[in-house]
Length: 184
Picture 1 (cartoon, rainbow, N blue to C red):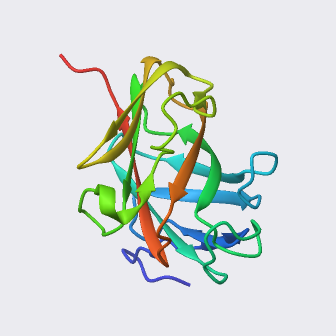
Picture 2 (cartoon, rainbow, N blue to C red):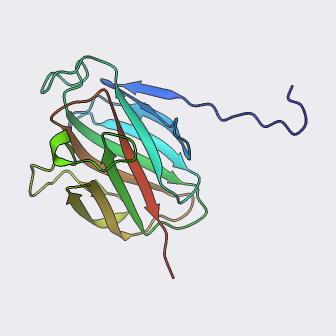
């Protein structure tokens, strides 16, 4: 039994699927599920709940050997088809949603790190959202993917699909998620 006034810390859970693990250890949100191996037919699916409209960071680690272009699920191969389902439990509507990749926490991704939202593909057909009609990608010195022209009301779930590529695979990298609220 807890003493009066004592607050239990939220438990951080690491979710492993495919050749990766996913963690909400940096706080601000909770992962509620993970599945898939990272292929187009069986993407890595991360289910989350965001309790505020502030940026949060998903920590991604390899759990299997790194082998560029190796078989998905058996190797961290640098090609990760992603689907992220995010429950908006912030109490505010989101009018944009941005993802940013970081090889080093709190530092912009640069060209030399090989990490991007499929930067080599000039006309991607694998970027989609259930709640936003359009997207923009920015590269160098950032790797950002901004979903716009839509809305996610409180207690609604938005689905995001995209391809992350890492041609110089690392053991740990980060995906910053930034829900945007109306200004003014």
